[in-house]
Structure formats: structure tokens, C-alpha cells
Picture 1: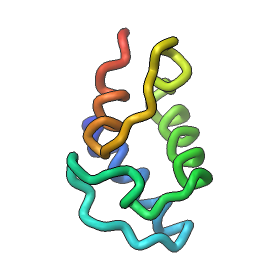
Picture 2: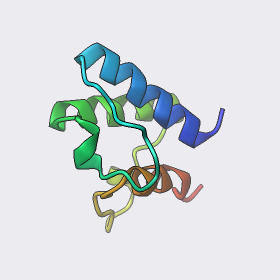
Picture 3: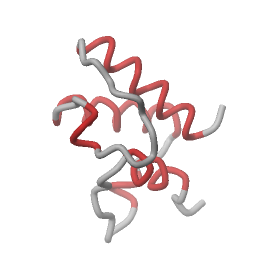
Amino acid sequence: MTVKAKIIAAMQQIAREQQVTLPPLDDDLSLHETGFDSLGFAILVARLEDDLGIDPFTIAQDAAFPLTIGDFIRAYENVPA
């Protein structure tokens, strides 16, 4: 499973648990439009760290919070090995 597929699957699972109706998750969708609140994103980042073994927002000193789904996915895909 690709990083993108894992992120989308995690988002869908959390949305079900938090009773959030997700819009179609395309790369240009603003993170604000996902319906996730700060708790939802905290859960997402924690689960992805468990699943992928990385948190790009604490690894990079200059990490900026992503604005779109595509930005969020690229943050995980572009973590240096």
C-alpha cells in the first residue's frame, strides 16, 4: 500500500470514528474543508506515526503545516530516509 493510500485510509477510518462526513479527498482539497478538527488531525498524525514510523512535522526543523491534502501527503512522502 502506498503512503498516499495509507493516509487516505487512516483519514476515512478516523472520519467514521469521529462521525465526520468527508468530502472527496483530492490533492487540492484544503485541510480545513475535510471536516477534521484539531483532535482529528492529532489522531491522524499519531496513527500515521505508528503505521509509518515517522512524523514529518517533528523531524524537520523548518516544517510548515500543509494547507491541502496533497501538501499533507507530500510531507510524508518526502521525509528524508
